[in-house]
Image (tube, rainbow, N blue to C red; front, side, top):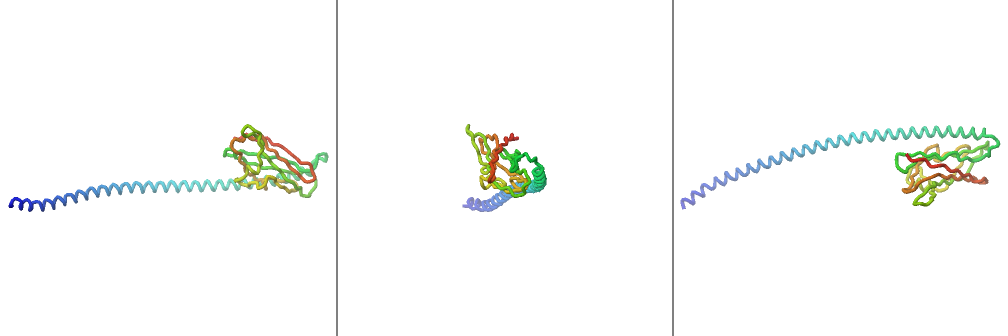
Length: 227
């Protein structure tokens, strides 16, 4: 009994000190894990700050690029309008000074094509003029088709269908026009865009113009090589 009592008396402080030691040990482990977690959080915070700075720089660069592109677009638009005005004046003088032996009336002057940096996307502009001294507006309509091959067959595609979903789309297959001396399509000498379907190999553009009371006029223009 005495031995048992002695063991019980000794077990109480042993348990107390053992619990204190375990608590201290657990606290040390917890503090170490806490410090490690804080270190990881600090690293992640620095990474986030770096990403935010990189994003800010990228956004700033993108804004600068967008501003430069917008400025270039406005400059191109201004130059195209100036060229259009000069072409109008030139067409007027050519029409007035044309030899009397030449047939007066509508002329399909050009169908201009330019390749773009996007595959199968092209910029185009159609130019019309008239010969003669008549100052009354010339009215008529155009039909423009792109001819080529697709799937081993000859195919003719309407220009209006190739412009859908792009800037300055054509709403109708037949393009109406009214002008005195010079006409550009789109207006003001700007370029519009067209997109060729996959698998289509263009050869030429056919432009057919009709003016009431006159014989239809037709011209073909060879397709350009895509750069």
